[in-house]
Image 1 (cartoon, rainbow, N blue to C red):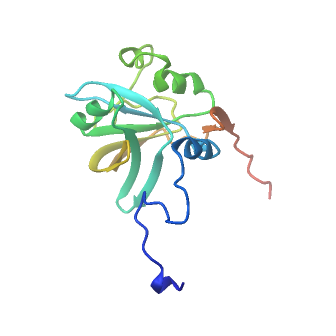
Image 2 (cartoon, helix red, strand yellow; image 1 turned 90 degrees about the vertical axis):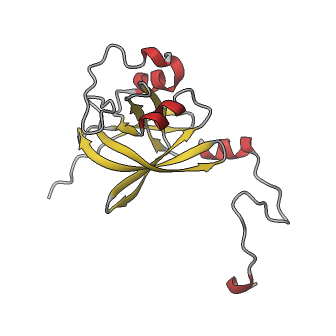
Image 3 (tube, helix red, strand yellow; image 1 turned 45 degrees about the vertical axis):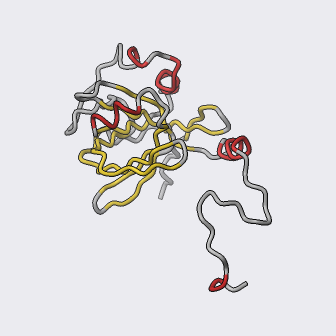
Length: 184
């Protein structure tokens, strides 16, 4: 078939001559991808909440916009929607325990304890020592499967540093080593 005669496929619709991809096979395949690790935090009239996420992506630099995917079944999800703001705190190599705490090892009410959080423009919690913090306002959302894709306008940046990054791949945390600049 030529591209002009190829039938259009709808997202989530299996090809008639192929079996659909199972959820377990998809999760196993996604575990092979390396992703930066982020704490996504919010605070406001809806309360304070935070979680660990790897589903964060740049959308545009004009205007600065990113996306983050949140599971609608998460206990923190309604808090993010009510507040309408969030901060993406990208974690460094030494912050794997904090990532595990926000991934559920520690109860939601205790996740912010023992740390001096700051804020930028929106009032969402900013983690001192994060590689970078993207302080955002949620401007749109799209339901896809079990998650909402939140489109976020970046209103302020904080902590842009040069430390080694924390990754998640193969169902465990790993370190992204920074190479020394090449000598000229």
